[in-house]
Image 1 (cartoon, helix red, strand yellow):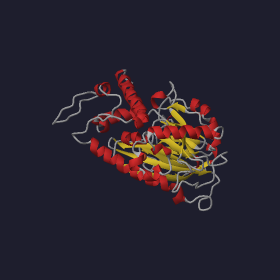
Image 2 (cartoon, helix red, strand yellow; image 1 turned 90 degrees about the vertical axis):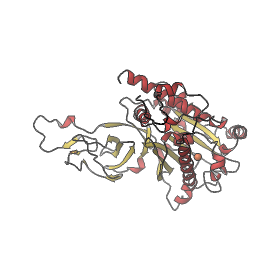
Image 3 (tube, protein in one colour; image 1 turned 135 degrees about the vertical axis):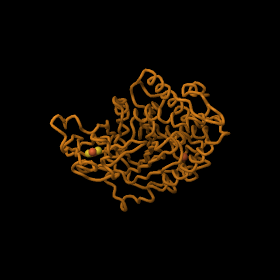
Image 4 (tube, protein in one colour; image 1 turned 120 degrees about the vertical axis):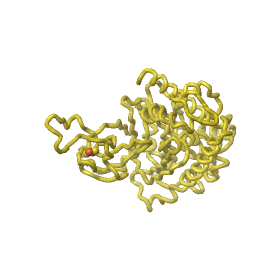
Amino acid sequence: MPVRAHCENPDRRTLADLIREYRPGYSLEQRFYKDPEIYKAEIKSIFLKHWMLAGHVSQIPEAGDFFLFEFDVESVIVVRTKEGAVKAHLNVCRHRGSRICLEKEGRSKLLTCPYHAWSYDLNGKLMTARQMGTDFKKADNGLHPVHVELVGGLIFVSLAEKPLSLAGMKEDLADVFETFGFDNMKLAAQKSFPIAANWKLAAENYQECYHCAPSHQEYAKVHAMALSKEAFAAHREKYLAALAGKVRTQESPYYFDQAKAGEEGYQYARNPLLSGMESGSLGGKGIAPLLGTIAEFDGGASEFMVGPVSFFLIYNDHMVGYRFTPTSHETCCCDVFWFVRGDADEGIDYDLETLTWLWDITTQSDEEIIVNNQQGVNSHFYTSGRLSEMESFEQHFLNWYLSSMKDSISNTSKGQ
Ligand code: FES
Ligand code: FE
């Protein structure tokens, strides 16, 4: 890691030094949130390695439908092929590298580069390229493929050469996907929140509910998680005992530093809402048709996560997805997705504004607190601070993050 220039107070510590000096139980040092060299290492060891939510099959129902999934300098075309499969290709022309799809979404029979008009079929195969000489092989110039895995209708992509396995997660949580009807959902709404902060501050914020009571009044009126650690544990114990057999209560805590070797990290847990609450809405009442095989509201919601930046909150009548992706070393984007049962009709079975209200308002306040966080972290006077007992998930995230960065150093020194 090159030395970072800092005229007033030269900090010559390497990334390895910073990782070694991390104090467990504390937040990260400032350079993790500001240093462009550390950010470059994160892209390589985290974002080009792990699975991320790209979108949902309901966004591309017909052959030729596509949308773009973008982060940092990368752009991925997610497309429905003529054969009905979901494929993903890097949005980088094999001629001289131009972006091919310029619109965020659309429908097209061929993927044609706007620069010199090379065109690719929906499987990424190069179909036409004018005047390339007799030794040019079209077969060697297809679009770079991106790995795709479907979890029900959720589309995950990995830009890794050899992606981590999702097979264990799929097998373990098959009953959860069945209960909540993951195969039969549709995307009802999606909203992007650009955030003027390093991506880790957004991801860390999602890992803790220490901020929920002071920052999210609306959320705290519905979710028990905003209670103190002890009150939440007591409420949860009572709730899980009463739930017996209705929805899976068994946890799968294989997230971040708890992930199994060679597998992508994931988590499932069932948590209570406050007494009398049914769903994530104004007033806490149900707002959409029950999902999957769920027969009634039971006062709870499930947490589900896959990989480091894709999270889901499954109410009995809708699911909310979150994805945190970096756009630069000092900016990121939080995308929020709202899913409902596949046969639910907007305006009849659910009202879009009612459906999106809680997590729109909550994410707006998250954006504000995350930006405030970055601004304070930018100060010359910021020092790592002690984490609360309500920030134990964040500690798992930090442990995993630091060990991923440590691996990136040893891989670099091995010339990878
Ligand atoms: Fe795409 Fe030339 S860069 S055809
Ligand atoms: Fe929040």
